[in-house]
Length: 244
Image 1 (cartoon, rainbow, N blue to C red):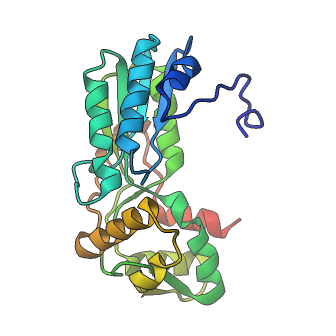
Image 2: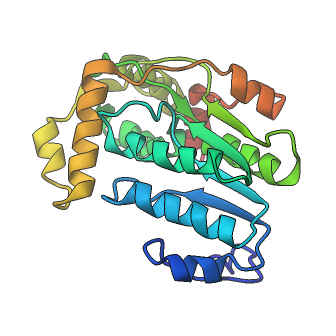
Image 3: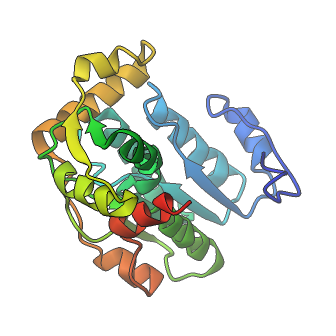
C-alpha cells in the first residue's frame, strides 16, 4: 500500500518492540506517529516510539493526538497524554496535533441516508459534537514537516460549529435530496457486533461519554490560522460525498 501511494522506501517496525523501532527510524529525519486507538498498551507504544526516535537522532516528530486528551473517562484520549509528555521532554522538535472527530468516519452515513432516510448512531441524537475533515489535518501534518511554523506547538484542529445529529440529519437531507431522520441505535445491540476486548470496551465507553456530554468544541480559530483559509465544513463534506 505504501509503495502504491508513492513511497520509495519502506521500513517495518513493531510498536511493541523497541529494537525494531530503532532500526526502522535509523537515518530518518522525521516521524509521524498515529497511535493504534483502543489498544490496551497504546500509551506505552507511543512513548516507545518517542524514545526510539530520540535515540536515533530524529529531528522532527509529529504526533497525531486527539481533541481533549484530558478526558480521562475515554481511554483512547487519556492514552495520548503520556505520549505528549514524552515529546515535551524529549528535546526533539515536535508538533502535537489534536484533531476532533474525523468527518471521514461519516462517509458511510451518506449512502445510508440516501438508501433509507435515517442517520443512526449509538448515542443521543441531542448530543452536540464537533468534527474535522482529515484532509485539513493532513495539510497541517505536511506543514509541520515542511516548515518551522508549527514547531514546538500543540494545536487543536476543529471545523467550525458544534452540532447535534438532528442538525446533521438536516445537512444530509439537503445533500442527498430526501428527508433524513436522526435516530438512535441501542448501545448494547451496537456493541454486541464488536469483537470482545479493548476495542469494544473503549468504543462503548466513548459512546456513553458522548451520550452524557457530547464532544464539545467547534472553535475553528486555530485550524483557520494553521491553514490560512476556512476549514472544510461538515455541510460541505456531506455534499461532496453525496456527489460521488
